[in-house]
Image 1 (cartoon, rainbow, N blue to C red):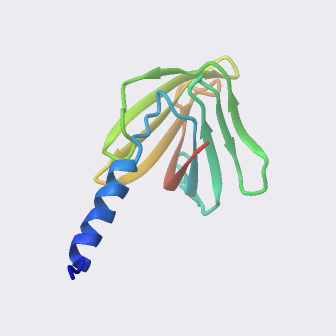
Image 2: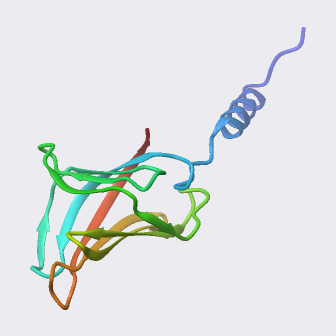
Amino acid sequence: MKYFKPTFAFMLCALAITASAQTVSVTTTNLAWTVTDVYNVNAQLHEFDSDIVTIHTDGTLLWNDAAGSTKLQVSGATLAGTWLNVATDGEVVYHFTADSQPATLTLQRAQGVYTMEVSMYQNESTPQVYQLSISSYTVL
């Protein structure tokens, strides 16, 4: 009688899981990003909050705080850059207008850490800048 070695069975399971993992791209996948900290650069204040930033492939951006109140809602943002797999390091920039002023949302992963930066001119010569720490993302 032949016996199946547990090591071989484990390797087969690991191979099956790896083969079934999907590549998630910001250009083809709607994503919700979980924010653990918002740093207001101009005011030098941290808001430790569980915000959610949702980014859709059609250029819709939605930033809600933990209570569900909308901090930012944008339609028609344009994407600059290509990031084919959010499980690897990369960066993209979304360009949009907020209150008729230019604005950007930069999403990146560097050394395995996800961050986001929102920069908006609000009728001022210097932009209002928010740096967001990201803990995870969810495919919508």
